[in-house]
Length: 246
Image (cartoon, rainbow, N blue to C red; front, side, top):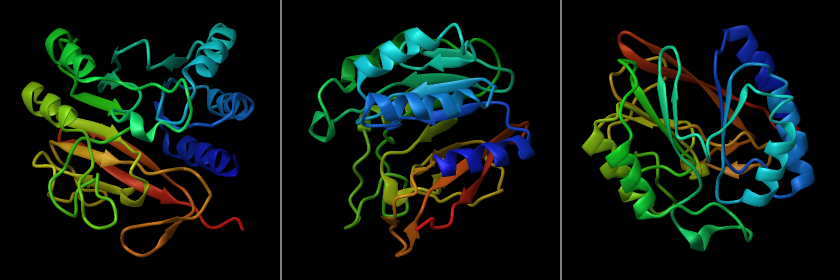
């Protein structure tokens, strides 16, 4: 929660126009409500996604109760296409592998769900499309955004196929915490550095959690957040990495 509040101050100082809370918000309904209240308090358009730890039932009850109070918070599990000013979001809520569901009632999507997006969604205008999902697409090599210790790529190949077939230039993902803070270009293996404009960008925004997590480069993360800027030259990103609160 402390990281959330510090992130809010950073977002405000940078003029952020949209927030994406990309899944795994809380394990318990009590904690979920607290996190929701903080995020909703940003008072700017906010897209909330479900991960492999969030209870669909808890989220549905909370969203129904708070929807009128916080109309700027958008449920990405039901609203799958959002045309904003400079970007269009396509959403795939949940996670593709049930083996990694951390409690009953989590959102698990199937190949048919990805196929539905591929077949049915059409761009609303000329803004670049950003695919948002908790888990990343399957990358290529040990510098991609879906790498786990040992060098294996564990992302979802169906998301990779969707991006390639529909030529989606942007993607926002997380879940593979140790690969957080990385971005790649359209080949899913070429690293993209911070503050570098690119026509294609697929980013692993990592985790905001203050619990220490061992990263692939040997460091420890105590939480991170990203800002993505979209303009005529494509997109670029930068990260804020939080200090240990222990």
